[in-house]
Image (cartoon, rainbow, N blue to C red; front, top):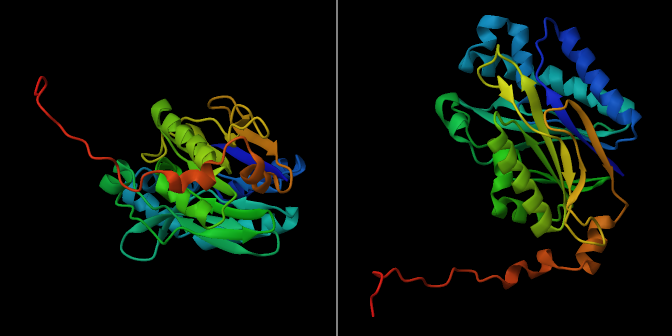
Length: 295
């Protein structure tokens, strides 16, 4: 199985046809390289705000509604492309309204019309205020022909218990779409994705937004490098980096994984971090704080 992570630039689109042509080109390129699973980044859907014009695209709240209004059309396009190329696609996440405030939702599409979605669990400071994005539905594991897949959207990847919940539910691959405006933010998600692969003995696929979109107050600056990580185990991948692209370089990064590689690693790897998780103390040891020099 070949996995593909997108380092995806945010572009201005004057028409729906422009967006459709871009997405069609990107999917065809990855599928042409033999990819079975394509991962697009967090908030990549915000480029669709450009279709509403500069005034709307430049407004935090109006841009959310403009993008969410296109969700059905975007889903139909991804479903068609997944079917045409026989691939699984995690679409770029974006706002979805099921109440007064939006959630940050990433949708997964299968080659035979399957669809599912994962909402972000923990909001960043910017999402909380001024954007007002709220947590969505529960974590999910998708039982697919490629294996069991979970999704940790950007900031979610930095919280180990979320990743642990996915691997305990059987996840073998965790998708990590991200949108970060600085090297520090990208680095936090990168470290989180690598840590989740280590402790869960699974594959993580990190797909970031890249480049500048000065017309948007939400995705105006984007830094990152696409990558695919695994447990740093000599029988699997000594460095933990299965594939990694150049910083801020748009395009696909791909890695091939042998069938059953994750389950074999969990049984025969040099370490058993997944199995030995429960040996940690369930509560931290007691710590006393005392004045220096106290007897």
